[in-house]
Amino acid sequence: MNHVTSKEITHCIRCGTCCLKGGPVLHHEDKQILREGHIGYQHLVTIRKGELAHNPMNGKLEPVPQELIKVVGKGEDWSCIFYDEKKASCAIYEHRFLECRLLQCWDTAEIMAVIGKDTIIRADIINPNDPIMHVIETHEQECPYQEVEILISTLSKGEDKGKTLKRLTELVRKDVSIRSFALSELELKKEYELFIFGRPLFKVLKDRGLTVHGKI
Ligand code: SF4
Image (tube, rainbow, N blue to C red; front, side):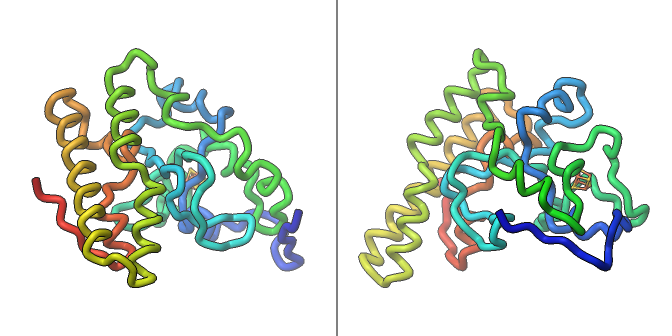
């Protein structure tokens, strides 16, 4: 496995570059941090299976092979929500995650050894009896992310434009509708939405240069 070593830097100089690039992906070892209440669902975002994300192994933007739970960014930015730029420090340093503890930018061997291994999914940290689990399953069935990527690819080839846009609009509407149901009927807290359902499809599409309205 390739990893990076640097002759110039031999210890953390608190430049913040790693935290500004984005928060970590959570592993089973990190569940304790949640259990102890140092972080909550409001600090997490789900990257759905098939969604594009930077692969730290090769630096490329690639579909994730399995669902991932990641620390959310600040606003539209991916920089870690726990990074305090003014103090150049981590707000939860004593309880930081496995990937944060292992990341040494001057020698990435340790972090590379855990990337993509023993990561958690939503079902690992939600009570199985919580009715939201059923809504998550419905959302995955009704708005499968992998279909979104297939449709985007079809559009980029200029094939079946009308039919493809119609289906994308349908998926965006279902996505909005299921989220609205959970917020109003199950009283899901708005701040948990990114963790429970991942990023709204209309936002994912916007980032890919596609504007699809999901008004219902
Ligand atoms: S949790 Fe802390 S150490 Fe980890 S990326 Fe965020 S700010 Fe950096």
